[in-house]
Amino acid sequence: MDTRREFIKKTALGAAGLTLAGMGMTANSYARILGSNERINVAIVGLGRRLGAFTEPISMSSANLHLVYLCDVMERLRTRAARRFSDLIDYQPRLENDYRKILDDANVDAIINAMPDHWHAPGAIMGVQAGKHVYVEKPGSHNALEGELLSKAYTKYGKVIQLGNQQRSSSESIEIVKRIHDGVIGNPYKATSFYVNNRGKTPIATPAPVPEGLDWDLWQGPAPRSEYKHDTWDYHWHWYGWTYGTGEMGNNAIHELDIARWALQAKHPERVTVEADKRHFLDDGWTIYDTMKATYFYPGNKVIEWDGKSRNGHDTYGSGRGNIIFGSEGSVFVNRNGYRLYDRDGKLVENRMQDSRDDGTALGGGGSMDTRHVINFFNTIRGQEELKSPIDEMMISTHMCHLANLSYRLRKDLTIDPNTGKTTDPDAQKLWGREYEPGWELNV
Image (cartoon, rainbow, N blue to C red; front, side):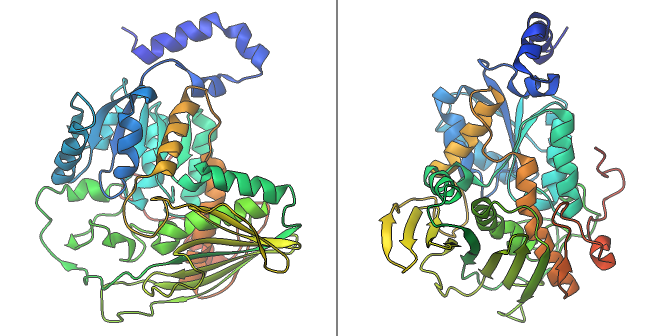
Protein backbone atom coordinates (compact mmCIF):
# COMPACT_ATOMS: atom_id res chain seq x y z
CA MET A 1 0.00 0.00 0.00
CA ASP A 2 1.25 3.49 -0.84
CA THR A 3 2.36 5.69 1.99
CA ARG A 4 0.31 8.83 2.63
CA ARG A 5 2.89 10.98 0.87
CA GLU A 6 3.20 8.72 -2.19
CA PHE A 7 -0.58 8.57 -2.58
CA ILE A 8 -0.96 12.35 -2.41
CA LYS A 9 1.95 12.90 -4.78
CA LYS A 10 0.58 10.53 -7.42
CA THR A 11 -2.96 11.88 -7.30
CA ALA A 12 -1.81 15.51 -7.22
CA LEU A 13 0.60 15.13 -10.12
CA GLY A 14 -1.87 13.07 -12.10
CA ALA A 15 -4.57 15.70 -11.76
CA ALA A 16 -2.32 18.71 -12.18
CA GLY A 17 0.12 17.81 -14.94
CA LEU A 18 -1.02 20.66 -17.14
CA THR A 19 -1.16 23.02 -14.20
CA LEU A 20 2.51 22.39 -13.43
CA ALA A 21 3.46 23.37 -16.96
CA GLY A 22 1.21 26.40 -16.85
CA MET A 23 2.81 27.57 -13.59
CA GLY A 24 6.30 27.09 -15.00
CA MET A 25 7.21 24.76 -12.14
CA THR A 26 9.43 21.70 -12.25
CA ALA A 27 8.41 18.49 -10.52
CA ASN A 28 11.08 19.18 -7.90
CA SER A 29 9.69 22.64 -7.26
CA TYR A 30 6.21 21.22 -6.90
CA ALA A 31 7.48 18.63 -4.46
CA ARG A 32 8.46 21.49 -2.16
CA ILE A 33 4.85 22.64 -1.76
CA LEU A 34 3.11 19.27 -1.92
CA GLY A 35 0.36 18.98 0.69
CA SER A 36 -0.33 22.67 1.20
CA ASN A 37 -3.30 21.92 3.48
CA GLU A 38 -1.86 18.88 5.21
CA ARG A 39 -0.73 18.48 8.76
CA ILE A 40 3.07 18.25 8.74
CA ASN A 41 4.64 15.42 10.74
CA VAL A 42 7.84 16.59 12.42
CA ALA A 43 10.86 15.11 14.15
CA ILE A 44 13.31 17.10 16.29
CA VAL A 45 16.81 15.63 16.29
CA GLY A 46 19.14 17.12 18.88
CA LEU A 47 17.42 18.15 22.12
CA GLY A 48 20.03 20.32 23.77
CA ARG A 49 20.28 24.07 24.21
CA ARG A 50 18.37 25.01 21.06
CA LEU A 51 15.24 23.05 21.96
CA GLY A 52 13.51 26.20 23.23
CA ALA A 53 13.51 27.62 19.70
CA PHE A 54 11.10 24.90 18.59
CA THR A 55 8.72 24.35 21.49
CA GLU A 56 6.43 27.30 20.78
CA PRO A 57 6.05 26.96 16.99
CA ILE A 58 5.51 23.21 17.13
CA SER A 59 2.95 23.43 19.92
CA MET A 60 0.89 26.18 18.23
CA SER A 61 -2.44 24.70 17.12
CA SER A 62 -2.56 27.15 14.21
CA ALA A 63 0.67 25.68 12.82
CA ASN A 64 -1.06 22.31 12.15
CA LEU A 65 1.98 20.24 13.09
CA HIS A 66 2.32 16.84 14.72
CA LEU A 67 5.48 16.06 16.66
CA VAL A 68 6.23 12.43 15.86
CA TYR A 69 9.74 12.03 17.31
CA LEU A 70 12.03 13.54 19.90
CA CYS A 71 15.49 12.17 19.11
CA ASP A 72 18.79 12.50 20.91
CA VAL A 73 21.73 10.24 21.67
CA MET A 74 21.58 11.26 25.36
CA GLU A 75 18.76 9.57 27.26
CA ARG A 76 18.23 12.33 29.80
CA LEU A 77 17.78 14.92 27.07
CA ARG A 78 15.04 12.78 25.51
CA THR A 79 13.15 12.45 28.76
CA ARG A 80 13.63 16.13 29.61
CA ALA A 81 12.28 17.18 26.21
CA ALA A 82 9.30 14.87 26.63
CA ARG A 83 8.46 16.49 29.97
CA ARG A 84 8.77 19.92 28.43
CA PHE A 85 6.38 19.13 25.59
CA SER A 86 3.93 17.35 27.93
CA ASP A 87 2.84 20.79 29.15
CA LEU A 88 2.29 22.00 25.58
CA ILE A 89 0.70 19.18 23.60
CA ASP A 90 -1.93 16.57 24.46
CA TYR A 91 -0.14 13.53 23.02
CA GLN A 92 3.22 11.84 23.48
CA PRO A 93 5.84 11.90 20.73
CA ARG A 94 8.03 8.84 20.36
CA LEU A 95 11.48 8.98 21.95
CA GLU A 96 14.30 7.78 19.69
CA ASN A 97 18.04 7.37 20.03
CA ASP A 98 19.00 6.67 16.39
CA TYR A 99 18.36 9.35 13.75
CA ARG A 100 18.52 6.75 10.99
CA LYS A 101 15.32 5.11 12.22
CA ILE A 102 13.49 8.40 11.68
CA LEU A 103 14.78 8.55 8.11
CA ASP A 104 13.20 5.15 7.51
CA ASP A 105 9.76 6.35 8.69
CA ALA A 106 7.82 7.38 5.58
CA ASN A 107 5.29 9.31 7.66
CA VAL A 108 7.84 11.91 8.76
CA ASP A 109 7.61 14.99 6.52
CA ALA A 110 10.12 17.35 8.09
CA ILE A 111 13.16 17.16 10.34
CA ILE A 112 14.64 19.80 12.60
CA ASN A 113 18.37 19.09 12.77
CA ALA A 114 19.77 20.67 15.95
CA MET A 115 22.69 18.27 16.34
CA PRO A 116 26.33 19.43 16.73
CA ASP A 117 28.13 21.00 13.76
CA HIS A 118 29.75 17.80 12.49
CA TRP A 119 26.24 16.39 12.01
CA HIS A 120 24.70 19.41 10.25
CA ALA A 121 25.42 18.75 6.59
CA PRO A 122 25.47 14.93 6.83
CA GLY A 123 22.17 14.93 8.75
CA ALA A 124 20.54 17.39 6.35
CA ILE A 125 21.74 15.54 3.26
CA MET A 126 20.58 12.21 4.67
CA GLY A 127 17.24 13.86 5.41
CA VAL A 128 16.53 15.16 1.92
CA GLN A 129 17.76 11.92 0.39
CA ALA A 130 15.12 10.17 2.51
CA GLY A 131 12.44 12.54 1.19
CA LYS A 132 12.24 14.88 4.20
CA HIS A 133 12.31 18.66 4.36
CA VAL A 134 15.02 19.88 6.75
CA TYR A 135 15.49 22.83 9.08
CA VAL A 136 19.17 22.73 10.01
CA GLU A 137 20.71 24.82 12.75
CA LYS A 138 23.61 27.14 12.00
CA PRO A 139 26.25 26.99 10.70
CA GLY A 140 24.77 24.22 8.53
CA SER A 141 28.11 22.76 7.46
CA HIS A 142 31.31 21.79 9.21
CA ASN A 143 33.66 22.80 6.39
CA ALA A 144 33.75 24.40 2.94
CA LEU A 145 33.23 21.18 0.99
CA GLU A 146 30.16 20.22 3.02
CA GLY A 147 28.65 23.61 2.25
CA GLU A 148 29.05 22.88 -1.45
CA LEU A 149 27.53 19.41 -1.08
CA LEU A 150 24.57 20.70 0.94
CA SER A 151 23.80 23.33 -1.71
CA LYS A 152 24.00 20.64 -4.36
CA ALA A 153 21.59 18.42 -2.41
CA TYR A 154 19.14 21.33 -2.11
CA THR A 155 19.00 21.61 -5.89
CA LYS A 156 19.07 17.89 -6.60
CA TYR A 157 16.42 16.57 -4.22
CA GLY A 158 13.85 19.39 -4.42
CA LYS A 159 13.18 19.65 -0.70
CA VAL A 160 13.02 22.72 1.50
CA ILE A 161 16.21 23.29 3.51
CA GLN A 162 16.17 26.26 5.88
CA LEU A 163 19.19 27.43 7.88
CA GLY A 164 18.49 28.39 11.49
CA ASN A 165 19.80 31.96 11.31
CA GLN A 166 16.61 33.44 12.67
CA GLN A 167 17.43 37.12 12.19
CA ARG A 168 16.53 36.68 8.52
CA SER A 169 12.93 36.53 9.80
CA SER A 170 13.17 39.75 11.81
CA SER A 171 10.74 42.30 10.36
CA GLU A 172 13.04 45.16 11.41
CA SER A 173 16.08 43.56 9.77
CA ILE A 174 14.13 42.85 6.60
CA GLU A 175 12.92 46.45 6.57
CA ILE A 176 16.28 48.14 7.08
CA VAL A 177 18.15 45.89 4.64
CA LYS A 178 15.60 46.78 1.96
CA ARG A 179 16.01 50.47 2.78
CA ILE A 180 19.80 50.11 2.56
CA HIS A 181 19.38 48.50 -0.85
CA ASP A 182 17.10 51.38 -1.83
CA GLY A 183 19.79 53.92 -0.89
CA VAL A 184 18.86 55.21 2.57
CA ILE A 185 22.58 55.52 3.50
CA GLY A 186 23.82 56.06 -0.05
CA ASN A 187 26.33 53.53 -1.31
CA PRO A 188 26.94 50.91 1.42
CA TYR A 189 30.64 50.12 1.42
CA LYS A 190 31.58 48.62 4.78
CA ALA A 191 30.13 46.57 7.63
CA THR A 192 31.57 45.89 11.06
CA SER A 193 30.13 42.71 12.56
CA PHE A 194 30.76 41.86 16.20
CA TYR A 195 30.09 39.46 19.05
CA VAL A 196 31.13 39.75 22.70
CA ASN A 197 30.94 37.13 25.46
CA ASN A 198 32.67 36.45 28.77
CA ARG A 199 32.91 32.65 28.59
CA GLY A 200 34.93 31.20 31.45
CA LYS A 201 37.44 28.41 31.79
CA THR A 202 36.91 25.19 29.85
CA PRO A 203 37.74 21.75 31.27
CA ILE A 204 40.83 20.08 29.87
CA ALA A 205 39.77 17.24 27.57
CA THR A 206 41.05 14.14 29.33
CA PRO A 207 40.05 10.48 28.79
CA ALA A 208 36.98 9.65 30.86
CA PRO A 209 34.14 7.11 31.05
CA VAL A 210 31.29 7.76 28.64
CA PRO A 211 28.56 9.65 30.54
CA GLU A 212 25.62 7.51 31.61
CA GLY A 213 22.90 7.38 28.97
CA LEU A 214 25.07 8.73 26.12
CA ASP A 215 25.46 6.75 22.89
CA TRP A 216 28.99 7.98 22.18
CA ASP A 217 29.28 6.05 18.93
CA LEU A 218 26.18 7.72 17.47
CA TRP A 219 27.16 11.11 18.87
CA GLN A 220 30.34 10.87 16.78
CA GLY A 221 28.29 9.78 13.77
CA PRO A 222 30.20 10.77 10.62
CA ALA A 223 33.38 11.74 12.53
CA PRO A 224 36.29 9.28 12.93
CA ARG A 225 35.97 7.19 16.09
CA SER A 226 37.93 8.15 19.18
CA GLU A 227 37.81 7.50 22.90
CA TYR A 228 35.57 9.73 24.98
CA LYS A 229 37.14 12.74 26.67
CA HIS A 230 35.62 14.91 29.36
CA ASP A 231 33.51 16.97 28.68
CA THR A 232 33.30 16.77 24.91
CA TRP A 233 29.66 15.99 24.27
CA ASP A 234 28.14 18.83 26.30
CA TYR A 235 28.87 22.05 24.36
CA HIS A 236 32.64 22.03 24.87
CA TRP A 237 33.09 20.30 21.51
CA HIS A 238 32.91 23.87 20.13
CA TRP A 239 36.37 24.62 21.56
CA TYR A 240 38.14 21.24 21.38
CA GLY A 241 39.74 21.48 17.95
CA TRP A 242 38.15 20.88 14.56
CA THR A 243 36.80 17.33 14.62
CA TYR A 244 33.31 18.35 15.73
CA GLY A 245 33.11 22.14 15.88
CA THR A 246 33.74 25.30 13.87
CA GLY A 247 34.76 27.65 16.70
CA GLU A 248 32.98 30.89 17.44
CA MET A 249 32.82 31.62 13.72
CA GLY A 250 30.34 28.82 13.13
CA ASN A 251 28.76 29.25 16.54
CA ASN A 252 27.89 32.96 16.44
CA ALA A 253 29.72 34.87 13.70
CA ILE A 254 27.50 33.26 11.06
CA HIS A 255 24.52 35.25 12.37
CA GLU A 256 26.18 38.64 12.16
CA LEU A 257 28.24 38.08 9.01
CA ASP A 258 25.12 36.98 7.18
CA ILE A 259 23.39 40.28 7.98
CA ALA A 260 26.47 42.22 6.85
CA ARG A 261 26.73 40.35 3.56
CA TRP A 262 22.98 40.71 2.99
CA ALA A 263 23.12 44.46 3.56
CA LEU A 264 26.15 44.96 1.29
CA GLN A 265 24.76 42.59 -1.39
CA ALA A 266 28.15 40.88 -1.45
CA LYS A 267 28.83 37.34 -2.61
CA HIS A 268 32.32 35.88 -2.18
CA PRO A 269 35.35 37.92 -1.09
CA GLU A 270 38.55 38.35 -3.08
CA ARG A 271 40.80 38.20 -0.03
CA VAL A 272 40.51 37.18 3.62
CA THR A 273 42.93 38.23 6.34
CA VAL A 274 42.75 37.14 9.98
CA GLU A 275 44.42 37.93 13.28
CA ALA A 276 43.31 35.45 15.94
CA ASP A 277 44.59 33.50 18.90
CA LYS A 278 43.77 32.09 22.32
CA ARG A 279 44.13 35.07 24.67
CA HIS A 280 42.47 33.96 27.93
CA PHE A 281 42.93 31.15 30.48
CA LEU A 282 45.99 29.88 28.66
CA ASP A 283 46.17 26.76 30.86
CA ASP A 284 42.59 25.52 30.28
CA GLY A 285 41.14 23.07 27.78
CA TRP A 286 40.18 25.56 25.06
CA THR A 287 42.43 24.64 22.11
CA ILE A 288 41.57 27.18 19.36
CA TYR A 289 41.20 30.97 19.10
CA ASP A 290 38.94 32.80 21.54
CA THR A 291 39.61 36.21 19.99
CA MET A 292 39.47 37.03 16.27
CA LYS A 293 39.68 39.99 13.93
CA ALA A 294 38.87 39.03 10.34
CA THR A 295 38.60 41.25 7.27
CA TYR A 296 36.91 40.29 4.00
CA PHE A 297 37.67 42.34 0.89
CA TYR A 298 35.02 42.22 -1.86
CA PRO A 299 34.77 43.39 -5.47
CA GLY A 300 33.49 46.95 -5.77
CA ASN A 301 35.69 48.13 -2.88
CA LYS A 302 33.39 46.69 -0.22
CA VAL A 303 34.69 45.43 3.12
CA ILE A 304 33.27 43.35 5.98
CA GLU A 305 35.12 43.32 9.30
CA TRP A 306 34.56 40.76 12.05
CA ASP A 307 35.40 41.52 15.68
CA GLY A 308 34.83 38.47 17.87
CA LYS A 309 35.67 38.30 21.58
CA SER A 310 34.51 35.04 23.14
CA ARG A 311 36.08 35.52 26.58
CA ASN A 312 36.34 39.25 27.10
CA GLY A 313 33.10 41.02 27.93
CA HIS A 314 34.22 44.54 26.97
CA ASP A 315 31.17 46.12 25.32
CA THR A 316 32.97 47.80 22.42
CA TYR A 317 29.94 48.71 20.32
CA GLY A 318 27.20 49.22 22.89
CA SER A 319 25.68 45.78 22.32
CA GLY A 320 26.73 42.18 22.73
CA ARG A 321 26.24 41.44 19.06
CA GLY A 322 25.22 43.14 15.86
CA ASN A 323 26.40 45.15 12.85
CA ILE A 324 27.27 48.69 11.88
CA ILE A 325 26.67 49.29 8.17
CA PHE A 326 28.49 52.31 6.71
CA GLY A 327 27.35 54.10 3.58
CA SER A 328 28.41 57.19 1.63
CA GLU A 329 25.52 59.18 3.14
CA GLY A 330 25.03 57.67 6.58
CA SER A 331 25.18 54.54 8.69
CA VAL A 332 22.95 51.97 10.40
CA PHE A 333 23.36 50.07 13.64
CA VAL A 334 21.35 46.84 13.44
CA ASN A 335 20.94 43.92 15.81
CA ARG A 336 18.18 41.54 16.85
CA ASN A 337 16.36 44.31 18.69
CA GLY A 338 15.95 46.49 15.62
CA TYR A 339 17.99 49.32 14.14
CA ARG A 340 19.16 52.92 14.51
CA LEU A 341 19.64 55.08 11.42
CA TYR A 342 22.23 57.90 11.38
CA ASP A 343 23.04 60.60 8.84
CA ARG A 344 26.57 61.26 7.56
CA ASP A 345 27.24 63.62 10.47
CA GLY A 346 26.48 60.84 12.92
CA LYS A 347 23.17 62.33 14.00
CA LEU A 348 20.45 59.84 14.97
CA VAL A 349 17.56 60.29 12.56
CA GLU A 350 15.47 57.19 13.32
CA ASN A 351 15.32 54.69 16.17
CA ARG A 352 13.52 51.36 15.66
CA MET A 353 15.01 49.53 18.65
CA GLN A 354 12.89 47.56 21.11
CA ASP A 355 13.48 45.20 24.00
CA SER A 356 13.49 41.59 22.87
CA ARG A 357 14.34 38.19 24.31
CA ASP A 358 15.94 37.41 20.92
CA ASP A 359 18.89 39.66 21.68
CA GLY A 360 21.88 38.81 23.83
CA THR A 361 24.62 36.22 23.91
CA ALA A 362 23.20 33.69 26.38
CA LEU A 363 22.89 30.01 25.54
CA GLY A 364 19.62 28.59 24.35
CA GLY A 365 16.77 29.51 22.07
CA GLY A 366 13.26 30.81 22.07
CA GLY A 367 11.73 34.11 21.06
CA SER A 368 9.60 35.74 18.42
CA MET A 369 12.25 35.55 15.69
CA ASP A 370 12.83 31.86 16.33
CA THR A 371 9.11 31.22 16.11
CA ARG A 372 8.68 33.22 12.92
CA HIS A 373 11.68 31.52 11.32
CA VAL A 374 10.48 28.01 12.14
CA ILE A 375 6.93 28.79 10.99
CA ASN A 376 8.35 30.23 7.76
CA PHE A 377 10.01 26.85 7.15
CA PHE A 378 6.73 24.98 7.55
CA ASN A 379 4.71 27.51 5.56
CA THR A 380 7.23 27.25 2.74
CA ILE A 381 6.72 23.50 2.68
CA ARG A 382 3.00 24.23 2.18
CA GLY A 383 3.70 26.81 -0.53
CA GLN A 384 2.30 29.66 1.55
CA GLU A 385 5.52 31.68 1.99
CA GLU A 386 8.96 32.11 0.46
CA LEU A 387 11.87 30.66 2.39
CA LYS A 388 13.74 33.28 4.39
CA SER A 389 17.04 31.36 4.60
CA PRO A 390 17.37 28.99 1.62
CA ILE A 391 20.41 26.85 2.16
CA ASP A 392 22.20 27.61 -1.11
CA GLU A 393 22.23 31.35 -0.32
CA MET A 394 23.03 30.78 3.36
CA MET A 395 26.02 28.56 2.61
CA ILE A 396 27.65 31.64 1.05
CA SER A 397 27.47 33.31 4.46
CA THR A 398 28.64 30.17 6.27
CA HIS A 399 31.51 29.97 3.80
CA MET A 400 32.80 33.25 5.24
CA CYS A 401 33.22 31.46 8.58
CA HIS A 402 35.06 28.55 7.00
CA LEU A 403 37.42 30.90 5.15
CA ALA A 404 38.29 32.76 8.36
CA ASN A 405 38.89 29.47 10.17
CA LEU A 406 41.14 28.31 7.34
CA SER A 407 43.11 31.56 7.39
CA TYR A 408 43.57 31.20 11.15
CA ARG A 409 44.61 27.56 10.96
CA LEU A 410 47.10 28.22 8.14
CA ARG A 411 48.32 31.51 9.66
CA LYS A 412 48.16 33.31 6.32
CA ASP A 413 45.89 35.41 4.15
CA LEU A 414 43.76 33.67 1.53
CA THR A 415 43.12 34.80 -2.03
CA ILE A 416 39.63 33.78 -3.17
CA ASP A 417 37.86 33.59 -6.52
CA PRO A 418 34.93 35.99 -5.95
CA ASN A 419 32.77 34.08 -8.43
CA THR A 420 33.12 30.65 -6.84
CA GLY A 421 34.41 31.17 -3.31
CA LYS A 422 37.27 28.76 -3.99
CA THR A 423 40.99 29.22 -3.54
CA THR A 424 43.96 27.74 -5.35
CA ASP A 425 46.02 27.75 -2.14
CA PRO A 426 47.23 24.13 -1.83
CA ASP A 427 47.28 24.20 1.96
CA ALA A 428 43.70 25.48 2.14
CA GLN A 429 42.60 22.84 -0.35
CA LYS A 430 43.92 20.13 1.99
CA LEU A 431 41.58 21.44 4.73
CA TRP A 432 38.62 22.13 2.41
CA GLY A 433 36.84 18.99 3.62
CA ARG A 434 37.39 16.51 6.44
CA GLU A 435 37.91 12.84 7.22
CA TYR A 436 34.86 10.59 7.77
CA GLU A 437 34.32 7.39 9.65
CA PRO A 438 34.27 4.61 7.01
CA GLY A 439 30.72 4.11 5.80
CA TRP A 440 29.67 7.68 6.66
CA GLU A 441 31.08 9.43 3.59
CA LEU A 442 28.80 11.96 1.89
CA ASN A 443 27.49 11.21 -1.60
CA VAL A 444 25.24 13.69 -3.40
